[in-house]
Image (cartoon, each protein chain N blue to C red):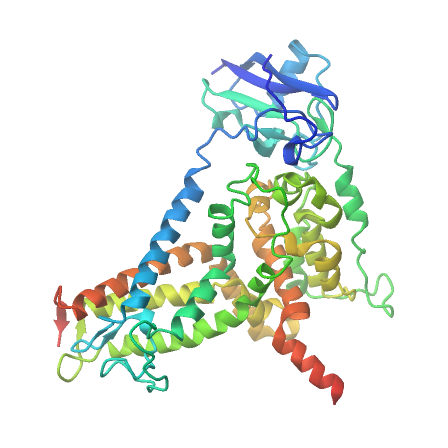
Length: 249
Length: 276
């Protein structure tokens, strides 16, 4: 079944822009990215949109669809009624480049700030041995496709530009948790998570989990466990007292 | 083409910050995003008002004939407690009519729920509006989350969890005591069933807690060296995704249990006995 859908697509750049109306054909089985491509092919050939795999694995086509951060290639048109006006905007947390394309380099800088996997010094590549039960927790986080939808929806930086220098965002706090849970990682990441990457800013409102297209339980399995680890290190009064006594004796 | 008014440079913050796509609307969500935070605020508001009233009531917390003690007053350790309700001694003096008898249990349970990760989420969304819903701007100019005093103390949740577990053991004792018959022997009434449903809900809520999951296994780096704790962690990980559901279910079961015992104790209703 085909029908004509009403789309509003934001077009513009850093100097300004507006929502443009398009009436466009929709066919059964299509996703939002198909419709954007049809608009590009038939009505707005200079519409800028970033995309790559069309399979929900590259994380390129992130946008906000009716105000909700989503992958355009994984958003089926069948979830909307034919009468519904569908509004597509670029991610509203990062600087816009043009139309639906944003500058997500903030995330790459944050990624660089996370110390990489640090195995024991005595182990050489090829000598790593670990059991499945020890690594399976971290493996959930390896499903991340770096679409940065979690970064986009996180109100800590979405609503507060001034927090960007001190808050890494859920994706990279999850990366820290992944490494902290890794059986062969020996780096100390707890102080780093709290002091350098702003774990304390996270108020566990779970929007990152809600938008994750890979269904990673970011809050329950990464951020809260990391908060608990930081608690043990920095805020647990009994452990603090125990350390004081141990040092004196 | 649709256009709107984007805030000027002086007022530009959040999604209106310089460099971001200039879109006049604060949010473009079309669903009913207000419903969830309002619903939660109403539920939590009802509980706060109910428990506040009950806390200062200092009455109708023990149905002596049926041996039902409400979880809100358990353990009853004040000299002011009515006869038969103090199985764990009366080591607190009678502090007068204005002071709640449940002075020990109430703060522990309140702090346990207030610092619970699920209720923190609900509180941030429904009362502090940070954010009310995903993709909806919060109204505040500054935000530091749980990084500073006093909210950083929410990290002490594990201690309140431990306190709540001790109280839960006492609640378990109370639930067994509810099998005592009227007068003598063994008995069981509707109140017994309500107390046990409440007990199961409270245990599920407490055992699915994130701090519990961390303490009993999550803090380990090598599960393979601790197979028992790994199994415990795996079990808790299975019930942990429903922690929020248990948080709400147990909220209602506590109110229902307390209200029922209050009604029986005040003789507004009589407890239906299955056997006695």
